[in-house]
Image (cartoon, rainbow, N blue to C red; front, side, top):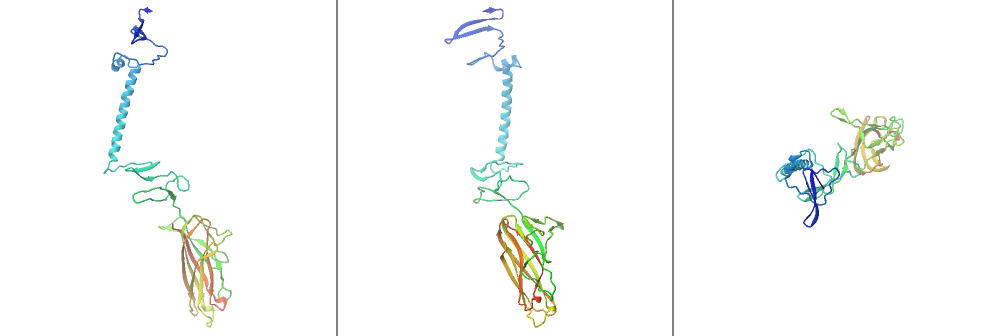
Length: 317
């Protein structure tokens, strides 16, 4: 087949049937399929210069772009390596470690994504972590550090000296004049959070009961003030009065204390007693503050009584 645009010849190249096209241009309107190589007798630059919109030109441009990108990555990599070499301080705004942090081939920290309760780690929250051997932190876990505290004031039951039996054996805050008031806590003269993770309901069924809402090690404090009015008694009465009070856990005595009020004729005498206890408490534990009694009084009208008490409950660990 021949025409004025060229000729097609059948030939053999290296023993294989071939077709030779003798033409200035070959137009392919469909697909050009090649199972072997396409060899050009001129360079890529020469091919590209002939047709700046052709595939060869575009491949050459892409190749140059890749080289530029590779060079940029190499420069960045070299910069990071320079920062992280010995005796150099590396400063980054943020470093995210989703797996293990290794230093000189030794794993020193594994950072979990959740706290020990399975909750997402939250901002502005204090956590406790467990540490491993010296120089490393192994098997790190986060435990949210929770606050628990309350401070309060209490009063004794109402009575009249010399006319009524002085009330004995009762829990502070259970009525008949005995109340509990949550104290105001201040910082630099400003009121702060009054209580946290400790429940007290002055209008509920469990009057005088403080409920623990967070497990932990607690310090419980109580300062009692007792009084005895010798002026309404008779001097033949034995004037020493022993008073007993308790801190109770779930209705049982946790710690008790005793003090004496000695005879002071024709006067009201007061004595202060402090109780302090540290205990591991769990959620739903209940604390109360109990006035037991006054001893050594032949006439029940002249027994010692509770003036007031101050207390606090604080999570310390």
